[in-house]
Image (tube, rainbow, N blue to C red; front, side, top):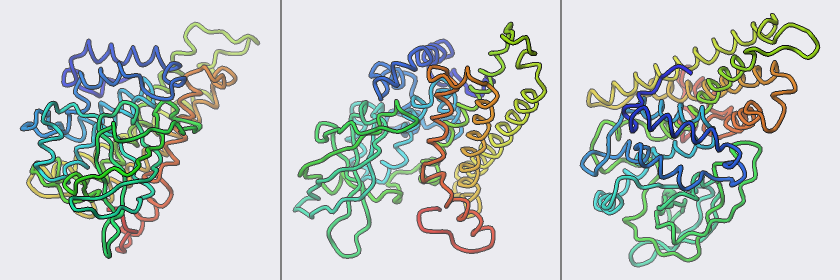
Length: 381
């Protein structure tokens, strides 16, 4: 695949390539476990996945959104579930809404903190003297099996209260292994269960709330970034699918005596269209990212139109890459249909990405509303 990621920024070329090779060789193990193995999470820590967006003064690397997204893209080519779990290294975008004194505690021992959250549905939380008493069940906590810190969505039982995230040590949370989806099987997106844990108010925050610390990254729209890091997994998988199809025809003859797949006109046309589709969507995606990032680096914030293009290019990327993967799967014939074939796994993983609310049909509606000068639905900008 084209070398879009600067591997020297992620532990060096040898270490990064070794990580990708290890992930590729263990795809079946990851699906059987239904989560990313602990030793791969440790490798993510070693190359800087979890400290990437942490401020330098807390021991982090303060990378740009594009640098982080390209890293997730590359890991997703090795395995979609691994890329999806690595994407939650973006958690400082959320956690930055905690009080600064709490953030000092979070990153006191190391910036390589693995955070996982279950947001929906927000559960009623009783106010206590120092915070909130938290109980309930939350779905889709991707990466929770490797987390040391967990967050859950709560709704304080008081008039006018906004939904919040309550953050607590992994030891306070029970993981119920309920994840049973058609794709992204290895993300370990299980349910979180909490029973009567008292969480201090300073360990809660409004999701998407104003950051308490300074830095260009913390002026970048956090909800948009949360969508981007998931969407870019489909880009990595599409690149892998293109490479798999091209490599599959090398030295291979048809058992019927028909032309090699690479010599067939319909396959050539499909491959060319898929390549163009993926490259065009990738360009729109990173162009929108870099445009918004320039606004934050200049000391400001992305405007309404820039954020809209972030969201639009994110949804567009997911659906274009998923469509390209589906077409590549179609021309692969019975070989690609085998559950053990990488194209089969990539197809399933990419289709699940299109189901995520961040990239759902409603985002097209919101983008169009802004183009016409209307307000989008809440939670889009």
